[in-house]
Image (spheres, rainbow, N blue to C red):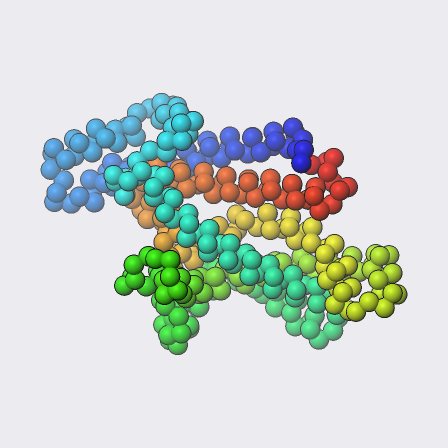
Length: 326
C-alpha cells in the first residue's frame, strides 16, 4: 500500500514537534529530579550520597541546549535514560512493564466499545425516530459528556466498595504469582472489568453517534434500496449492506479519539491503582522523573501517530477510491 510523501511529511513534522514538547514540558514543572531523589532518601541523604546522586544525574544542571542534544542522541540510540523514581531501572524497563497493562486495558475497552457502539448506532439509524432511537441516542450524548474521573469514582464506589462485586484495584490478586494458568488469567480479567467499564461509556457514545450519522446517509444509497427490493432479510441489509459501508467514519473517529482514550486511561489507572502507563506517569510526575515522563509522552505520541497511519492504510484497502489520495 503506497503512502504519499506529503502524508509522511505530516507525520514527520508531528513527531519532531512532539519530541521538542516532550523535552520542554517536564522542565516547566518546579523542582528537579535530583532534588526529588534527595528528598526521597530522607535521613539517608548523607553528603556522600548527595554527591553520588548529583554525579549520576548531573545532566539536569547543564544548559537547556546541551540537555536537548543529549536527549536527541539518546533517542537516536534508543537510550531513554535511567529512571529517577525506580533507579537503577532504565526507562525502557519501567515503560515496558507498564505498557503491557495499558495496551491490554485500552485494547479490551476499544474492542468492547466498538462492537457495542456500532451495533447500537446501526440499529438506531435503521429505526430512526423510533423508541429505541429516542432512548439510545440521547443516552450516548450523556455518556460522551460525563468526565472519566466521575465514571471511575462512581464505578469504584458502587461496584467495588459498596457491593463488593469486583476487586478494588490493581491488575491481579497480589497473593498470586504471575503464571499462564486459569487462576491468574481469571484474576487479571476480574481486576480489569471495572477499568474497562470506566473507559467504555465515552467510547460507546462516540461510536454510536458516529455510526448512526454515517448509517443514515448510507441507507439512502441505491444499493441499499436494491437489496431491500430483492427481499433480503433486515439483518442482511442492515449489517451486510448498511453497516459495512458506514464504518469508514467510525474508523476515522477511532484514530482521532486515541488521545482522549489515553487521557481517560490515565485517570482510570490512578483511581483503580492499575499498574499501567497512567499510574506510571502520575508517580513519575510527582518524583520529577524527567526520563520516564519524556519516554512515556513520546510513547503515547508514537502510538497515536501509528494508529492514524494505520487508519490511512485501512482506508485505502477498504475504499479503493481513496488509494491514490493516501
